[in-house]
Image (tube, rainbow, N blue to C red; front, side, top):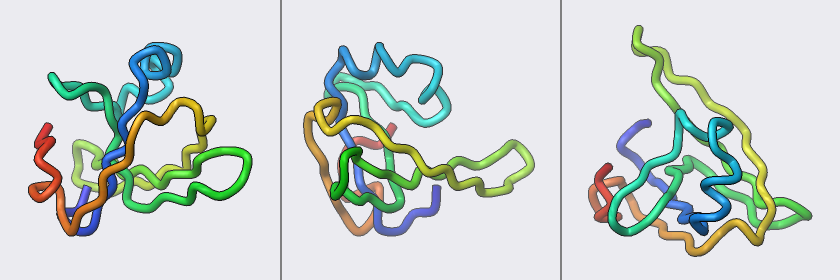
Length: 89
C-alpha cells in the first residue's frame, strides 16, 4: 500500500474470525486487535465499502473493492499516512 492517506478499519474479533481466509491477504493483527488498511471507504449503503490495496511479489499494486456488514466494524481511524496511525503492522 502506498504511504499516503489511509484508514485503519478495526474489526470485532468474531468478525475477523468469520471472514477468515477471505481477508487473509489484508488482515493485520496486533495487541490492539484485527484491522484492515483501506485506501478509501464509503460507509453509506447497506454494506460498508472499502478499497483495499496489496502489492504482489513483483511489485504490482492491486486494488480490491470489499464490502462487509456495518456490524463487523469496531472502529475506524484515519490519518495522512500509515505512520501517523500508530498501528505499524
